[in-house]
Length: 288
Image 1 (tube, rainbow, N blue to C red):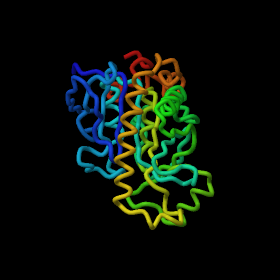
Image 2: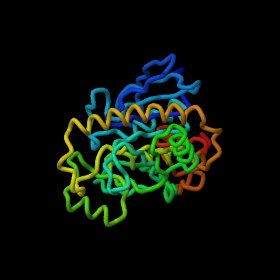
Image 3: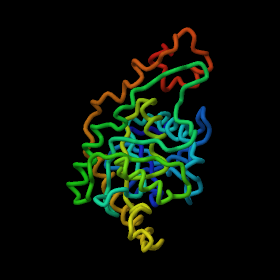
């Protein structure tokens, strides 16, 4: 496999491609965890080697619960990606986060039900630190770039990850608000956990499409309005990602060594087939 990239971009609802790519090619990968959502589109953006993945596949074919998160992130690792910018359409749980605003959460809260969110198991145990689930260096670049472009981009907040595909009941929405949650989505928690295990920097750009059902004006929102917001969000997201990719400094965070003290299993006790399966992730710690 010749295609390589240093930055990965995962596009969510309303964002299925990334304009401005040069010398782009589709790369179809098979991982030890199965097939990713779609072929990766690999090329250069602002002179940087980038890989783009449509999270739900072209044509938006995959439910959040159907996503093969492990394959999606492992595929990025196979391409050499060290940083992931994840774009996600979200509902707002606070009046202050209005449609068209971007939020860069620094915390996640899990309300999913039994999704696989680790590469480990089968004889290999590791516990990564996840107290701060987002790369703070990347988040700072995203927020600063948003300000430079005149896009409302807010630093910090909590992304509540729900199972879906139905949206919340009004009771659930109000409970989440009482907990202090900022935005609600269906995909990014598992990506963040797996990226940390894979020692890949990860940041979410949460694109607010509408207020969740708690809001008294929610019933007045039409599908056409939401689609219009998605379209405008996607255009702003493309501008923002191009700027972030252009100005990203050399990697100097601790994300690239997240597994250094995380592997608990005695190296001699790790099954050979598991070491081989996860060589890209754990090889430097197991001597392979």
